[in-house]
Amino acid sequence: MENTRLQKNLEPMFLWSNIVKKNIKYRIFSHFYLSEENLYTLNEEQAHYLLHVLRLQTGDVIKIFDGFSGEYLAEIVQCNKKNCQIQIKEKLREQSVSPDIWLLFAPVKKDKTDFIISGATELGVSKILPVITQRTVCERIKIERFQAQVIEAAEQSRRLDIPSVENPISFAQMLKTWPKDRTLFFMDETGNGTNILNCFQKNNTKSAILVGPEGGFSEEELALLRQQNFAQAVSLGPRILRAETAVLAALSCWQAASGDW
Ligand code: SAM
Image 1 (cartoon, rainbow, N blue to C red):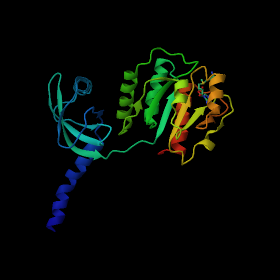
Image 2: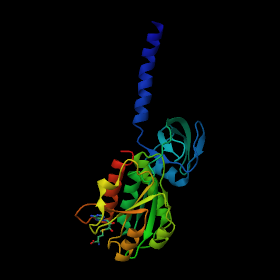
Image 3: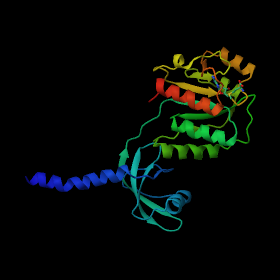
């Protein structure tokens, strides 16, 4: 009897705390390793975002993750115009790792490249590697910008890990340094590739997807790719897709057939 009364009194509190946790809208990435019950001072940019963009205050709660140790609930315990200190309250999720799929792509125009980077992060790639092909036309590549974009996309997509972003490499260097135990699925717009559903199976563990530039791969590049034992030509159907559409289509098919969908 006493126990039941106690439980009834506790229930609303329990429900309230679960509802609060579920409804926490704000989620940020931490450049520090996090652990329970510790206090952290956020960097100026994050403090500005929380305090001036989201207009959060002392006592408000956020979700925070560091890419390695899971996701935590944290409370803003102190703030002034420029600084913000948070205290980790509890762990909300254990760390999980995304499937082992890399994206290699020939950079395109700035806004389309931005779209590729955030889309690939949402679709769970583990590594992003820009490749300069013969017909790649793009402005200067800013890796720091790509890194900021993967963090933003991971924050909003509830990812717990952050894909690595590599410095651009040439097409020749890519072939020369390729790890032979990883299959390179290259999207071949010439119609000579295998139907995508016949390429991706449950056992495609170490995989990578390569998408060409707006002008497509050159004949020479396609011939070189076809010579490699680790490479496989893939068709995305009879229509020619924009590079950014091809990235999303290929990654979606891979995730459905071999990944974590
Ligand atoms: N300029 C090329 C042409 O007109 O044939 C089209 C290149 S497409 C805009 C950019 C990249 O997307 C291609 O290099 C290829 O990797 C991929 N792609 C587009 N459509 C594809 C398809 N139907 N099958 C396989 N890959 C495709």
